[in-house]
Length: 288
Image (cartoon, rainbow, N blue to C red; front, side):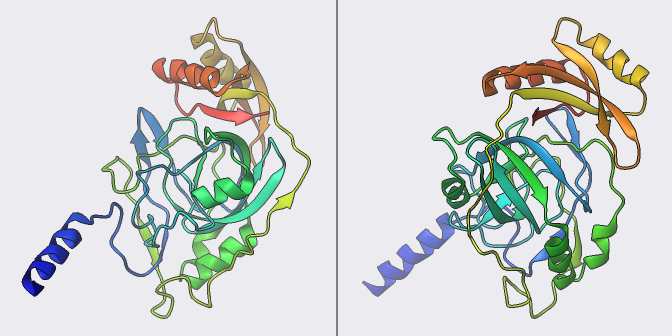
């Protein structure tokens, strides 16, 4: 009887596999540029980050451990980003209903093109995501608390990296799924900070409220240094409702090709696929 119990226990343990890195110290992680679905993504330590776009919810393929070595929990106030430094603290605003919440970004994702964030089911519930799981959001980095968090993990100076114009808002294969992106640990956690200990930045879980500000969706190709470059790209997408618009690039004005407006996720996704099919780099879905 005991032998059968032990054999059964071994069988259960053998069947329990986790995607993502093995458990261990939480690490400050950025990673190398990588390509997914013909799109180049550039993770980096952002000193500031404030973008709009579409967010989704972790599905059945959620990892056992996040990219920075934290245990994944569907009830955590956590999210995945294709480009932000890990871990960091962001404020997510549901632009449709005005709910806001501070969460910890500690994973790479989502896997869907044209999405800027993937949240746990608990975050989706608190922010009032629709049943379909896709909603217009603003994601804003809390630079102060993120710097504190990075410092706790021995990587504080890394967050002073210079910004690069034209934030990429595309996506990445799920953690551990063998995608082209390779996470790079650049600051091991202190021995006393094996997990989310007292030195860690805490989250209140309190949902705030601002005025809702939903808007139409646009497919935007950002970051051109001159209007002429932007117009040359626009000429390649002849027949689509495109225009050249100025965007702020940190210390100078840049130019973007903006395509739209689109009033459904399906139409915006279709336009994004069409732009990618033309070989145009770095298109993103934004809300404006």
